[in-house]
Amino acid sequence: MLRYCLLIGFLLLPVQYASAQGTSEFTFGQKHLFFPETKVAIRYRCPNKTQLDWSIESADRKLLSGIAKVRDDLALVDFVTPSLKDGVTLDLKLVVDGKSQPLFLISRDVFAEQREWLGKLNIILLDDDDGIAADILKGAEIPFTTTVDETTTGALILIARKEFSTNDYFFTAIQGNFVIVFVDDPHQFELVIPQITYNGKRNSFLLTSNLSQIFSNTSKEELSARLFGKSYNPASVFFILGSKDDRVTLETIGMNSSESGWEYAEFRFTRGGRLLFVNAPVFEYWETLPDSRTFLKLLFDEMKSQQKSLNKEK
Image (cartoon, rainbow, N blue to C red; front, side):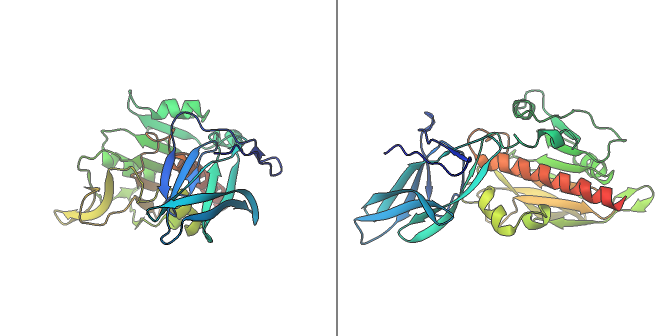
């Protein structure tokens, strides 16, 4: 493979070979988001040809190009993604044999330009003693505390515990907090949705699995391209609605279930507060899947937007 050198304004630095982590290999159209300086190989099925042209483009300008040989009707387009400055994301396009797919790059330090306002989000992490989430947030220089009580309000609460009392999360959410529960344990999870009253009033909610509703400031197309896709999501569970004793439940099913489940389930309460369950193993795949960092960044952006809305209402 040739060593390329690219320059677009101040965004790109000279391309280097990836570290010894090996090559990330995907089928064309399956994966769109990558770290910089990563070896990538894209499989492209192309019968009746011996070779094909490929290129990586930005704003209709070719940055990289090459020729891939076709063997047994399959071409392997391999390249190294460019280096990026901290805090930068870059939208590119991979064109293979005249067909294109988005190619997004995200720097490993995606929060480089945001730490000042991250300190204003009131982030609270509830993690197991041997959990990795705290170490990851510390390594990313994301400020957080670890205590929640009945007076906590206006906080972004990340819950990465294996064992938890689910009903407590409902009441924590309706106090006016944005609660995110990471569920990646393959064991059965069953949450009986309570009839909630708060301050003497019944609190109804909207349940959605629609990402464009959960992340209101990001388009559906961007979300589908930048977050974990079902074709390579390493999660072990999905969510479904069920029932128990005439009560609605939120349950998990395994990856191999015949039922079709959700990757996300959010309860948005009419009197304030949000409770989001996600199956994406964000912290476990922090180093290997850029989707993890994008997901956390979107959560923080959404919380920032929510705080602005609340301040306007006041």
